[in-house]
Image 1 (cartoon, rainbow, N blue to C red):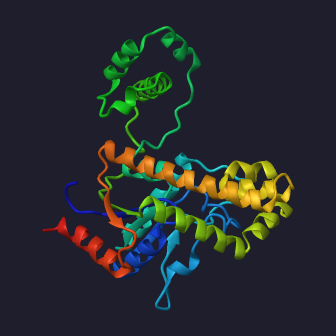
Image 2 (cartoon, rainbow, N blue to C red; image 1 turned 180 degrees about the vertical axis):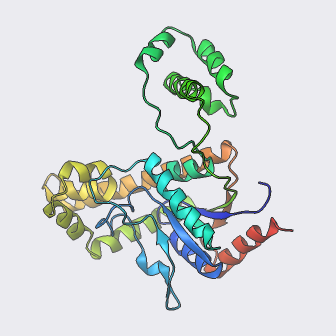
Image 3 (cartoon, rainbow, N blue to C red; image 1 turned 60 degrees about the horizontal axis):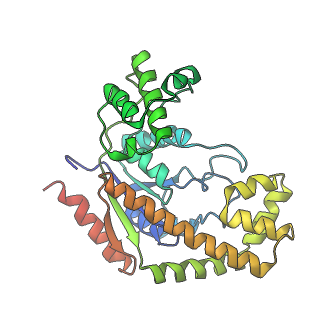
Length: 309
């Protein structure tokens, strides 16, 4: 990274305590939090998505958190829409001389911001795709290289990805497309992690707590409000297995066991995504989850300040 950091990103797998870190960091550094969670955008999906509202109340003050509760359960929300909503909030925070602190565990959302993906929906061009049929991966890669420089091998590992990349590059070229890109965001990226056994224990403990706090009742209320069972099952994890339990497809013990296993697997996939981000060149400075909160904040402050020296 070069120049000044104009944002801090706090990421980590589920149950890593990243929200507490982000909220306290924003409180102490005159900042505001921007959520990067694909399910916390939905209203009335609180316990299951881990909206830890209490974390944002610090010393009698409410730390602002954006992009939470912005659409109704069942409404379609995409990375494209997240990017647009993020930029609106980011520009507002910066205009008020506050520090944006992005926090979340949805790797695709986080990466779309840190990598500054173009803000445009490129339509599928089936006739153009037909012209690429029968071409080898080597030929497709050569075509893609005529449109852009290949920065990493992930551009060229899957045929479907290469074809779509060529399609997008051709669209930009044909339309002389230059605008609607992200401003230059130079973020300090900090990860919170625990060892595998600790992570699993924290996930299991939190699941028990959330069930005690009314997570089953939350899902039942969503179903009664008109949100379809298919929609809740689509949201996965807590909403999927609890819906099955309420439909009497599985017992309570089966629900707990299957949900617990799925969350463990989800956390593992999150860490895999973050490691892939690192391989692509995004530097993540990791903190031990067991480090006391004050020490975490102090260390992040040191990293943030070091860029000015």
